[in-house]
Structure formats: structure tokens, C-alpha cells
Amino acid sequence: MAGTAMLWSNKITEKITVLNEGSHRISAVTLSDDILDFNLYCVYMPCQNYSMDLFESTLDELGEIMTKYSNSTTIILGDMNASVNRSKGYRQDKALKSFLNEKHLSVPKDYPEEHTYYHHGGKQSSQIDYIVISSTQIDKISDIKVMIDEPLNTSSHSIFSFIEMSCEELFNILTTTAFECAPTISVGKRKRSWNSVLQQLCKQSKDAHWKWKSLGSPSDINDPANRKRLDMKRELRKLQRQLNAEERHSLYQNIMDAHSGDNATFYKIIRRQRQSGKRLLDCLIIDDVHFDTPDLIREAWTNYFTDLSTPSEKPQNQQYRSQVELDRILLQDILEHEDEKTIEFDIGTIQKCISKMKTGKATDQFGISAEHFKYGGEKTAKILTNLINEAFKFKRVPQCFKEGIVSPLFKRSWKTYLPTKILSTYNSFSCNGKIDGIGTSLFRGT
Image (cartoon, rainbow, N blue to C red; front, top):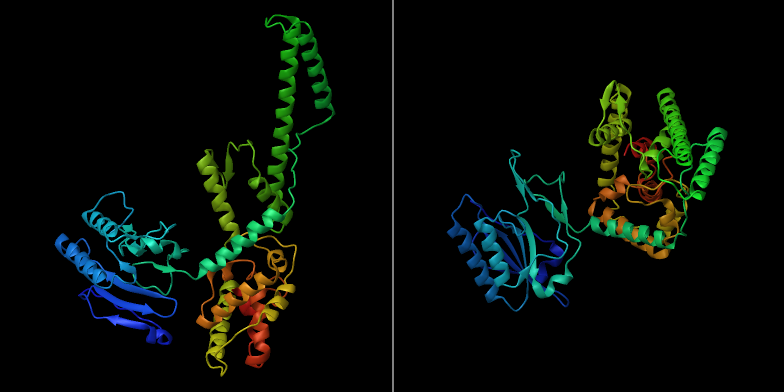
């Protein structure tokens, strides 16, 4: 039998009033204090395997409860088994939209478009899980994110998160502000291949063009001045194409001759790929396989760089990963059995960690570098302090902290970047040195 359940922290139990209304498909509570006052409804609507009458009767039941407790703001969340943006109009979709319009309910602005339900057999997917609120209060909810493939979520439905949006918003503010404050740098055009022969031929072509123009620009193809102008232009372009071809051939030869440790050539390829312009590659050959269309060439480049960035599955790598996993288990066991359960950092500790981050490094996928944190001022440090304390409080590190500049692969010292500095500080007053022995291998591998 289908049903719903609502859980809340013991800290807010005194603010919760359970509304004994509705069937097993509807749960309702009132949350009120000096600031908040709203009715929260958790619903599980019948799916398409049930009759349309049951779907409509559940909506009617929900509507009656809302009318009875209409003195507070309404928030409805759960599995609607219907969509508000599906192009194919199912009857359930139309009934849900009609109900929302009738009760003056709306989906928050900028609601994610990702699907929230995935069939276990891979047959279909759709967005049927929603958070809706009274239209008059719609501006008070923002930054909703669908968390896809969350490892702790064993349901076929995705879950919504308000947590990591704070990190992403901070990164967006830092990158936008830095971009607006940075001086504009004009980049000159790419210089053409040039030599003394091309310079002499260019001068002759200009002279021929000037003589042809001084004679009134005759259009007759047999006119000597016009004939010479066209011939000189043809020879000039021919030589330019030859020089460009030689340059490309030299580049490709250097790439073929480069060894795996030649970082200069590797980054030169990346820079060329990022450059804009009309230079097109006609054919790309990788392992005797020809890629001669734009789509195939793009796919080949993608696969090539993916292979370069993917660690090889060598026996020593597997042994290293096993050691890292053992270190992680040991660290988790140490932290779980410590007497000090609450870890909280002050802004001074965070600022000290930020000051020791190395500058002059490339930005991460969020566009963030160490300079953003260093020159972000006290407000940035304060926000980071709150985010890190929240991560320790709920024992959940934001995914962006695992991927970005704050958690790189270390070349020499693991005690360089923000999380490791924080953990080292925590180690000094809580773990009695037990973490220090495993820090190097653990943080080099995460």
C-alpha cells in the first residue's frame, strides 16, 4: 500500500503541530514560531496504473484540507505522478495544472528542468516530483537543485538540495566580481606565416594593383594590367597557403615526436583547441583511423583528452587506491570515536589557511583560483567558515569542495590547500597526532 511519512529534527518538535487529516497518501503538519507560519503537505499521488477517479479524489481531498487550514502559507511537496512541463498532455498532468491554478499554487521560479524519476529498467524518465507554494509567497523560495545519482538515495527518484547552491553562488560571485574588476587586455590578431619571399611578392602584388587602379580599373580579363594583377594575387595566395601548410605539418610532426612527459607540447595543443577562429581541421588520424567530419573530429578530440586524463589501471595504482581506502576507514574510525564531537572553526583559522594557499595556479572548473579566496576579503572568509562548519556539523562535504581548487592533486606537499590545512589544525587539538601519519596518502588520493 502506498503511503507517506514526514520526519523532522527533535530541535523543532515544539514548533510542529501534526494535522490529523487526510488518507495514507497525504501527511500534513503546521510549522510556526515567531517568524515562520506555514502548512506543509507531503503527498504521494496515484500513478497511471490507478484510475483517474482516484487521482482526482486525492486532489479533492488535499483541496479540502487546504481550505480548512487556509490561514497559513501552503507548501506542498512530494511525488505528484504528474508533470507541469511535459509536452505530451496526460490526463494527470492536466488535472494537476488545473488544481494548482484553482488553489493559486505555483512552482518556484527557475525550477530545474532535470528529470526526477528514472524507471529501473531504463524505459523512461520524467519530472514528477515537485515543491509548490502559494503564489503570493513564490519569491521566498529559490536555488532549488535536483541531485542526480546521489549515492545515499536508493529510490528511483532524485532528491532536491538547497545545500550546495550556497557554494556555487559564492563561486559565481567571486568569478563575476573578479572579471568585472580585472583590466581589459586586448589580444592581437594571430600573425600570418611570413618570410622574405612572401614580403617581396606582397610588394609586387600591391604595385600591380596600384597600376591597374591608376588605369581606371579595367575589367577586361585580357587587359595586361588586369591580367598581371590577378596573376600576382594568385601567386601571393599560393605562397601563403604553402607556408600555412608547412606550419601545420611542422606542428603535427612535433606532436607525433613528442614524448609523454613533454608538457609544453601538451599545453600548446590545448591552447590551440581553445583559440577561436576559422581555421578548420579537414582530417584527424588517430591510430590509423580517419576522422573527416566536424562531429567525428570533435568526438575524437574528446576521447583523446579523456584517455589522457583517466588514470591507467596498473597494479601499483590499484595498490595505492587500496591504501588510500584503508586510510579513509582509519580516519573515519578515529573521528567517530573522539570525545570531541563538535568541530567548529573560527574565521581566523580559515584566514590563516587561505593565506598559505599557493598563487599563480590555473583555475578549476568553477573558474576559481587561490587568488579569489585571498583577495575576497573578510566576507569571503566568513562565508567559507560557515560552509566548512556546516560540512563538519552534518558530516557531509559539498561535492564542489572535492573537485575544485580546494582539493587538488598534490605534487609535493599535502599540507598546502584549504581542507588539509583545516584538518591539520583540527589534528593539533583533537586527534593527538593520529591523523598526521595517514594524511599524506589520504589527501593525495582524494
